[in-house]
Image 1 (cartoon, one colour):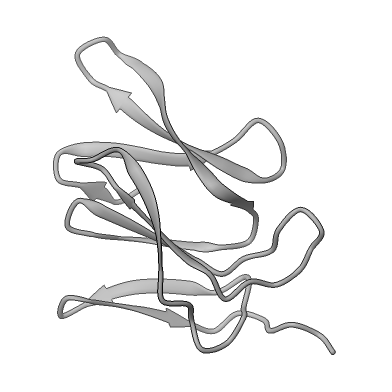
Image 2 (cartoon, rainbow, N blue to C red):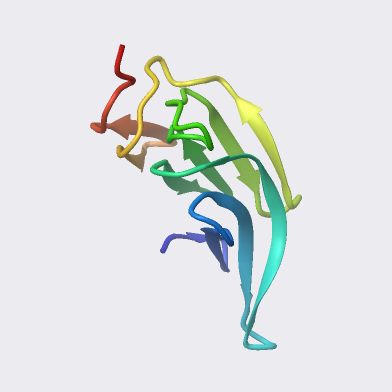
Length: 111
């Protein structure tokens, strides 16, 4: 897991799709539900940059491959949609480098 500041965030859900951000409350020793991901997905990639977590690509409920990039702001506790990836992909990785987020590898949409 990657930390956004001093907060441990967990991306998950109650189904096979990720639709929720959880936060570990160290003082209470429990996991607390935070914001709901506006576009549930699976096989996506996530990367922390500062106090923001970037969730890119993946597949939705109907298995459509996505170019979408959503950003969770841990300080504000909300999601926003940003510029999409150039190519729809799932099963890829993402990493922070010199203040940017890069998506690598994975699979594209089948025609």
